[in-house]
Image 1: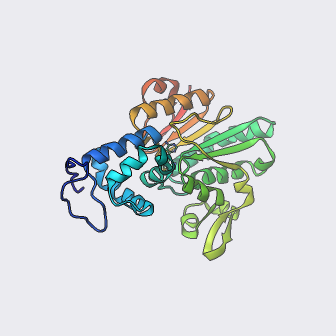
Image 2 (image 1 turned 135 degrees about the vertical axis):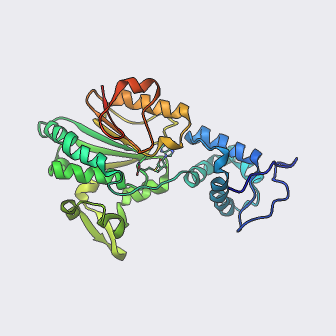
Length: 292
Ligand SMILES: C[S@@+](CC[C@H](N)C(=O)[O-])C[C@H]1O[C@@H](n2cnc3c(N)ncnc32)[C@H](O)[C@@H]1O
């Protein structure tokens, strides 16, 4: 990373040339941005992320017609700047996702979790799954495809998948359920592909049966969670890696309250349930936990 330099007395970085159209970001401005990102989205931005923050937020400066990070900091710290939080958080979060990502979780879901839940649903019981931090929707639709395989009549039963994220642009794509064909073709197991239809421009879209199982909503983990009832399964993968420890612990404890005994929590490949909630979960596979 290009080292951030100390700002001068005006708060702008001293004498740094602009690189590839980027605007210089000094340490003091970086710290102010990191404080707002932490407050608004629980994001932990160490100084090592300076280059990434500068490059992503330079685009926001352009959109807003601003020429310095000093102006940007003043904006996001002002009453008028609240409207920019969304743009800033969208720019700073990472939305990387894919169908059947970390496929061992879907093997576990299909082989050990869904047979039991399908049975519950067939007997008239309530079944809820949550893709928390769903990004553009590949994760909740992968869950829906597995669900339809285990329970083709899921749409007529009390079975729902909640898909939430902080990023409205990502949620718009999740709601549309349309993806580049190559993002779907190789990843979705062959028998499930009958639920993938062709869309304009050679793209792929989720069938109504798949979309009908998924409810897409905005949810920011730093604010109260507008979720109702308990969840038999929660996928929260590759989300808390971006959070500070305080928010991470609140997320794990929140999940422990929402998952009944025997329910499952799947986390990302570099994540582990730690802290007070750890004693409430038992590891049952790679980055997979059962609520004790
Ligand atoms: C790397 S994606 C993970 C997508 C998916 N779970 C997967 O593993 O493929 C991380 C997601 O977390 C979301 N996110 C970041 N901060 C959040 C917050 N405070 N509340 C809710 N979602 C957040 C981001 O918008 C992003 O879509």
